[in-house]
Amino acid sequence: MRITKRQLKRIIKEEGRKLRLREDSIADELDHLRANIKDDEKHVDNLESDIEDDRKEAEEARKDESVRRRRFKRRLRRIVRENTRPTRRVRRIRRRR
Image 1 (cartoon, rainbow, N blue to C red):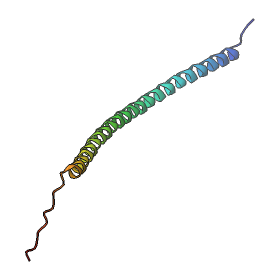
Image 2 (image 1 turned 180 degrees about the vertical axis):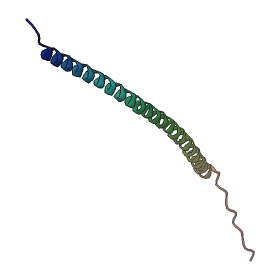
Image 3 (image 1 turned 30 degrees about the vertical axis):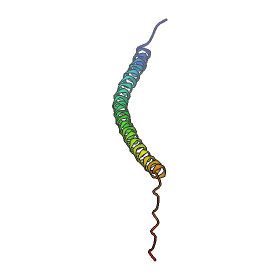
């Protein structure tokens, strides 16, 4: 089977297009990967800042909880003190007649 010059040129052009398409798609893929890496870095940074914020909130909640407990204990002690004090006997003052 013989191939004409025209057919040979057409085959070369088609193969060249295929190669260019592959190269373009590879270059596009690399660009997408680079963009994704930047997005992933931003995502990781956001996650780290969220974790730090959660830690701060948890610490504040623990502090608030300890403050509430101290206040509750203080109130409870006061109530117990007031209700367990010995009652004073009231002296009756006799009027002199």
